[in-house]
Length: 114
Image 1: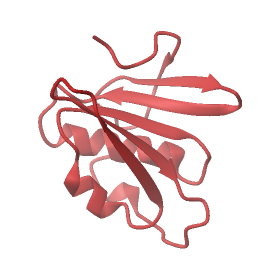
Image 2: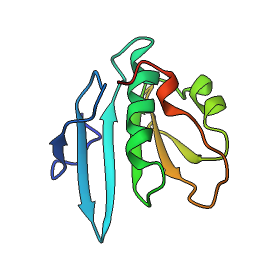
Image 3: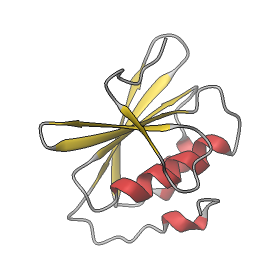
Image 4: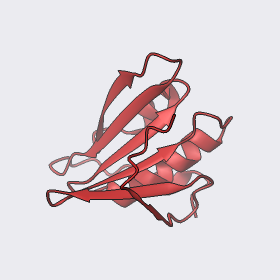
C-alpha cells in the first residue's frame, strides 16, 4: 500500500536516495517520500534534502517511515514544525512545515545532502 497520492508527480530532489513526489492543490505544494524500507542513514538524509525544499515556504513535506525520527526532530530547532501520525501498521507519517516567522537558521546542509 502506498501512502503517496496517485495524482502526485515524481520530481528530482538534489541529494535524495529515494523518489520524491509533489502534489499541488489549492495553491499549496506538498512533497512526499517513503523511507519505510530504508535503513540508516537514508531516512535522515532524505528528510534533510526535502526540508531544504520547503524551508521558508508554505509548502509541506510528508515522510513515511518505520518509526518517528527522534534524532531528526532534535536538529530542527525552531525552523520546522512537525506532526506525527501512527498509520497503524508499524509505519508513521510525519508532516513537516516551515515556520516562516522563526529567527533560527537550521543548516540542512550539514548532512549528506548535496
